[in-house]
Length: 167
Ligand code: NI
Image 1 (cartoon, rainbow, N blue to C red):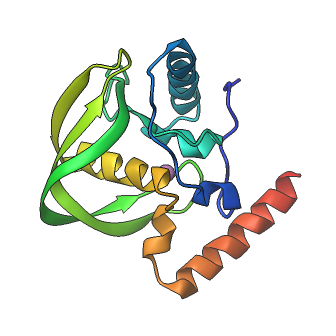
Image 2 (cartoon, protein in one colour):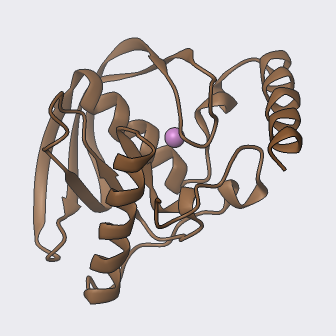
Image 3 (cartoon, rainbow, N blue to C red):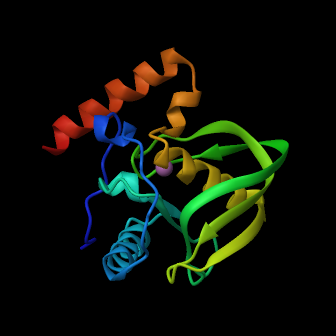
C-alpha cells in the first residue's frame, strides 16, 4: 500500500502554494522517501509534495524505463528555458485524463538534493516536461488548467463522478 494519499483534482488543496524548504533535515528526507514509494506504487513518473498535501517545494521523478533513476529536487528554480515542445501529459491527481500541453523544450534547473547540496540539471524531452509539470504543482497549478474551460468542466464532472462511485 502506498504510504501517502494522492489528492485528486479538483481538490482545492491542490491549489495551495508550496513554500521553500528551509532546512533539509531528516523529516524532509522521510517525506521524500514516502513520496518516492507512493510515486512508484501509483505507478507514476513524477510527484510533487503538493499532491500529498505537504506544501513544501519538493518533487520526486523517475522517467527511466527501468524505474531505477530516482531524482529529487528541493526548491527547484528554472534558470533557463528554450524552445517549445508539445507533449501528451497525464497526472496522478487527474486519473485517466491525458492531453497535449506546450512547454519549454530544454530547461536548466537549480535545486537542492536530499542532502541539501545545490546542483544544476539540464533537461530536455520527457524529463523537462515532467519537471515543469511537477513545478507547476508547487505553484498550485494542475496541468488541466492549461486546457479550455470547456474541457476543464468536462474533466471536473468526470472526476467528481468517479470519486462518488469510488466512495
Ligand atoms: Ni501531476
